Image 1: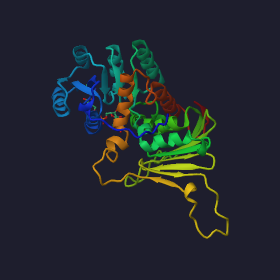
Image 2: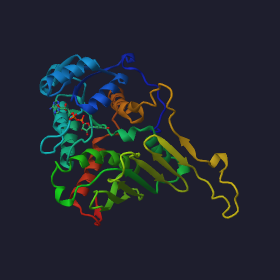
Image 3: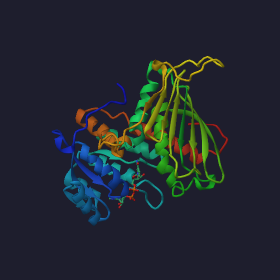
Image 4: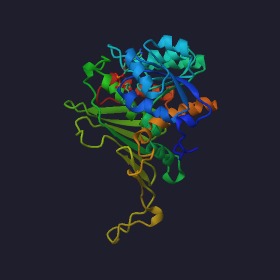
Length: 363
Ligand SMILES: NC(=O)c1ccc[n+]([C@@H]2O[C@H](COP(=O)([O-])OP(=O)(O)OC[C@H]3O[C@@H](n4cnc5c(N)ncnc54)[C@H](O)[C@@H]3O)[C@@H](O)[C@H]2O)c1
């Protein structure tokens, strides 16, 4: 089954089978990107909760929720939702607020869709996993990059015989790593924890489990270059380009097979370089490859009022919610944004927290 599929999107009110949903958190990201995505999901939003009750009521009014709450226990008890969305932030000591909220939702019998980060440690993920299994309810983390159409397409290429096996991959993402002395402090690691889920989810989705890693770090910007060996035998690099300009694209992902490779630039522009021969060296007068070996370019048109050129779709926000609602309604398990993937990302976080530059460590 390919990861990238052209599906027809239904509008919220067109679904017959629907899930009763509640939402915890009325902050900036939720406002911009998660509540608006519910317009395309099979959910009836009943309870909306924020520590600020007025804000919760305003969000409920704007996004079609029925009631506002300031206490999630009260909301879960009163509403008994099938599914709870959690988009919150951090405690003063740097822990992830959503981790405990997810446990409460599971214990109330609800499935959970939560924003990254899922937690701040492997132990917390294991606890979520235990409670999720005990309750028979799923926890999905919004690993949006694994739902970018372009990144899904890279995964499909890796699985296709023409590409050969994945031999190496490179991910570029701008993020500083604090100095070693600060890494025990979750507050100082907050930005790193907040963002490691983005490149981490791509590495996990495309490359699988990481076996061994080592990195070098720039002392001024905190930029790093990390080498990986994956359990599959593939090798990889993560270039965290702290110090780059904010006027440039943030990301590039490159996967190399056997005689073929592909690049995703800036999230939306995909070039697939199919297998081709080197034109006669020193003799060929034209660089054009035969049509069936030529590069394939994919880039969205941006003039029609379509869903695909709206960031709710090309950044994966709607697809990542549909992945969970489809699974719940279809009686299936999720395969992306799983606690197993979150656990791999937490192992990577622990690697950066505890291992100094220039040291190869087994994950
Ligand atoms: N995937 C992405 O593209 C992306 C982008 C930005 C942020 N995020 C994630 O979204 C999350 C939220 O980020 P933000 O910048 O919107 O944060 P924010 O601080 O603006 O919002 C958090 C909200 O949660 C509420 N909250 C906290 N604890 C609560 C509780 N117990 N009950 C009810 N409400 C509670 C707060 O009152 C606040 O309104 C973070 O986890 C962040 O990593 C993801």
